[in-house]
Amino acid sequence: MANNEQELDAATLSTHGKLAMFNTGLKNGLANGEKFTALMDQLIDTTDGEVLLAAAQRLADFKLDTAYVTFPHQYNNADYYLIFMSRLLGMHNDEQAALNSQRHSESLYHVYEALSVDYTFLYQVVDNGNGGAYYREQTTGENLFYIHLERRLLRFNSEAFTNLFINQLLLKGTDAADINTVIATLIKFGHCLRDDFGFNVDFNILDVVNAAKYELRSANLDRAIVDKLFVTAAANDHMLQNSKQGQGAQIELRQGLTVDVYDAAEKSGSHKWVITVHDPEQAVSWFDVLLHFNFMRDWYLDNIDSLEIKADPLVFA
Amino acid sequence: MEKENQPDLEKQDQTTHALTEQLQQKLDYVTTVRQAITAGDDRLIYELIDGDHYHQALLNEEPDSTRNAQVALITDVYPAISHYLSTKLIDYLAHEYPFFYYEETQIGEFQIYFGNWWDRRLFGKLNVLKVAFEFSSEEYNKLQQTFELAANHERFNTAQIQKISAGSDQLQKLIDAQSDRDEQKEELRKQLKENGQRNSLFDSGRIKEERQQIIDQLSKLADEDEQANNAHATMKDNEAKILTLSKEDTILAYEKQAIENAFKSFENFNERNRSLYVDYLTTLIGKAQVAADGE
Image (cartoon, rainbow over all chains, first blue to last red; front, side, top):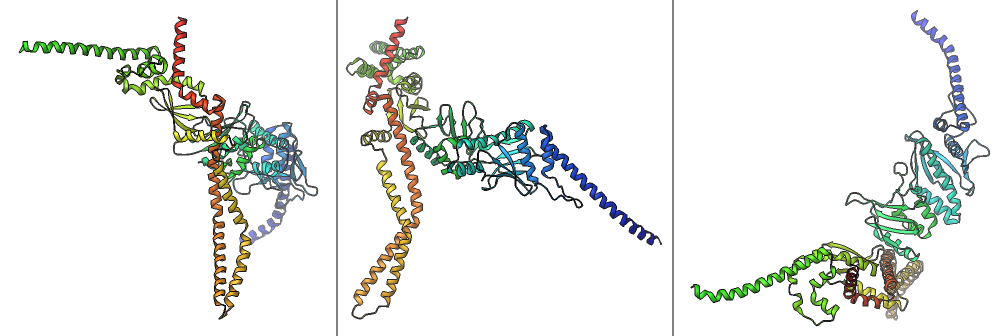
């Protein structure tokens, strides 16, 4: 008897329960959708930086579909990074990174007025546990930087900048000034993140600060590589001097602009060869040197296996 | 006994007298050196440490070794004197020879570096007490040859670099000719096979000879193949050699340029080196004169 009652209850409940569950599922799904649209409102309309960042952060791993409610028109999670970037730059009056959308689908990408439309940029979300996303140029697959909104960190990648902007663009005829325009926007993005939200930013090869030490892939640099610079510099009417910084060399590229290549190891017996760039206005990075001084660029590219500037090994293995 | 000793004592007194006299001279000498250092009178110090040379070189007097009678008293402090004298001397040299840099490796010992460019050469020593450069003959000779070769618009290592480059070009040709050689080898092997199939009682000598010729050609081609296989390593070695030689040429060019900027010619440079003692001491005398006039 007791058993029967239970079975009856279960049967009754199951119909009601199913309906209730369905309804709850719908409500939740709709609520989820509304939460989404509220975040979208924030992402596209807010003028408050923190609100913008919070919205982007939430949307970057927002699951819009639920078991009961699915939406046929959706953007990729990666697209919210693009929107965030354009909006943040827009709030700082930089409209260079133009958001474009694909004609027949909801997917976004960046193009830059200064570059050919062949070059499109978008984010690639990292699927593993680390999270974050890479800002990638589509045709070359170069990951220019890595961003993690929650951990508030940004890491630029020297290898991608060299490959894309030097090898692919500059050496194939793109104007240095146009490249500079794009780079300036990317640097500006880094500044906005650092100044507005306290992001930990490694500008890497783009760092203009005099104190920046660009670490070389080869910690114990073969002196023959410095010899090569000495010979090529002399052929280009520049003298590579003995560095004042102990073991190393210095070259003055123009009045007040000097590049040092030296061993910055603090312990004797170990080695840490670095490049530094000094200029009175602290406006020139190693990348700028590569962009503007042909013989320095040739030297760097010819010996890239040793000279390549190290990027954060945790995100650029 | 006492009486007998008397003349000895008298004699001893004379000797003793002479001794005290000598000791006084020594004391005077050392005192003068000390005062000269305290007063910063470098000219006087130079006169005291090698009076004979000083008098000959500056006053055109005859050699007289007694001028240096007391010098032995201070030889053990030469390093410290050299260290002391180096300050003004190097100031002077920095102006006259702007391309030389000095490193005091131990007290009073100075090494000369030529230039401030990358991997500048250790060029010799500065003898402060003698006011003289002691150039490394190997380095100096290279520089001398650089000046000589410049007349033909050649650099010190031009010939050697050309030779090595030609070697690399040759190797590159060997590499490029690989497919030609492969074709030749195939042709020769075919010939060899044909040759082996020919069997003539009457012609066996000629056939053998022909066979040997084919084998010789094949082994020559095999040698070339091997050279081509090793060529990349050799060419890399050559590149490293050329870099070393180009670097040396660059350094020598900078040295030559530095000398021409300061002295116009290598001859003038050498002449100035020879008269360095007199020139420097004359400056010191001149300065002392100005100081005395000013008082």
